[in-house]
Image (tube, rainbow, N blue to C red; front, side, top):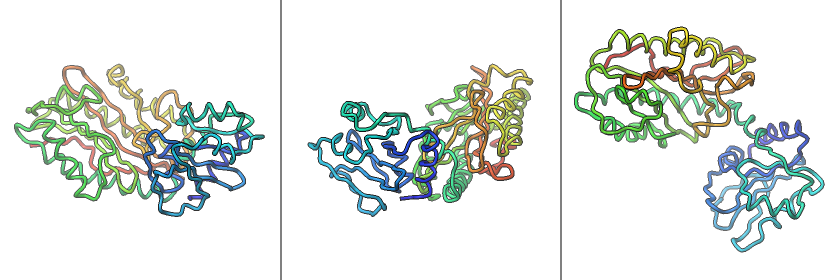
Length: 358
């Protein structure tokens, strides 16, 4: 059990007047215990309590050989789960529950009045996971370093006659050879006009001279995700496409230059969006500037005009402005950034200067 992380969550709960919380999101339980589990339909939870008497609820089907530093309570498929859980709750105190708790487990607890009330405790977990500790920061650096190395190899896969799908089919082996555990999300490979769809899935499109070549890719290493986008050009690039590229790149770099502790996240989106708008492509930047990332590729929290959070040291998120011209081309330039005590650390180091693949 990572007591430091548990304490941070409990401190956030205390600010809400909550002294106990039932966490059922497997990724958040792994964040605290180091145990990775796919419970499917069965009840799986970690009860955090302000008095330190945490409880880990497990079905006998689950394989958890290691000690995790908390009491384990085992149950069988035929046992009354709600009654078992209720025994460990303070019925005179409000219970925080997370957004992943299924109604078929929550409703029986509510009906038996197992707690004085039930509130959404997910923000306490989400805010805590949104600020990475030193161990997590280092894992994110390693995952992004692998992504940088992989990008160089992905670029080398482009040649006359190759299709998007043929390129995508080779990516997993490259990641594995570099020490990654797999994809953090299915890779996006887009040639030419296909890149105008921000989430285009690779198909049998063949690359042709003058096409942009967009890679939006990421891997997992030691349970943490990387994510980066680079846009290249095959054989040649037109003046118009070069201008689109340089504008997207400038928007990326401008937003990154604004990052330091205490800046409102929405102002980062504004900096990138204003630059693209001034260049005449405002309507063609069709998504938020970025997303938080860690154990999951898209974690709670985004970099958008609606987010009034102030940045804190330890936050990691993407900066990925894009310009999408339907039927013509698309450009996105994406880096992961870590907010530091005195500014920002860019986790990706693969060059962003416009590159032409010969």
